[in-house]
Image 1 (tube, rainbow, N blue to C red):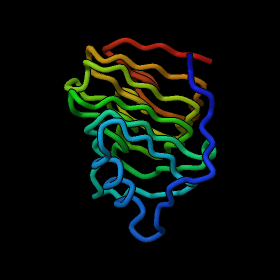
Image 2 (image 1 turned 180 degrees about the vertical axis):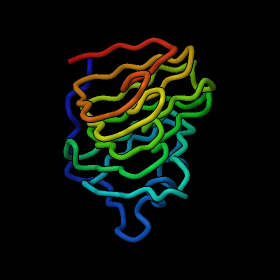
Image 3 (image 1 turned 180 degrees about the horizontal axis):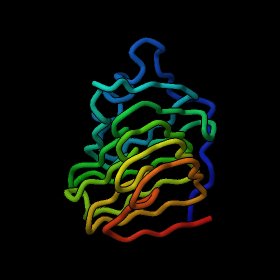
Image 4 (image 1 turned 45 degrees about the horizontal axis):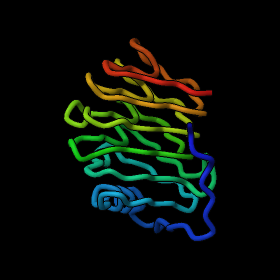
Length: 165
């Protein structure tokens, strides 16, 4: 079962200055089990900015669906360790020039969930929106995929994939 949409009256605000770097730092250093709900934001990743590396078991949500926007070139998020288990809800990812979210093979022992999110205008050779390495398990639910461009699919996986409407 997919969770109902998270609505919180108290959400975390991302500062306007250095907003992508703040988001990157906040998620990269989140502790195991953290549940982070952001107020609406629009952050732009520059070409030289690294992707957000998810290192722990975390849940990330936007207080308003599609109102937490991450845009810009490269990859936006990478799930990269055995301890990492990603749950994303209500985000909008646009303009990635590699897979917007990449689940690395080192995090393949966990099940990852992306729900009620939008992927728009992303591109990559394999998985413009989402790419999952072998062995990983991904659940995608109630999400929209628009104008993503990839030779090998909008969502590319060597692992297991479940999709819910």
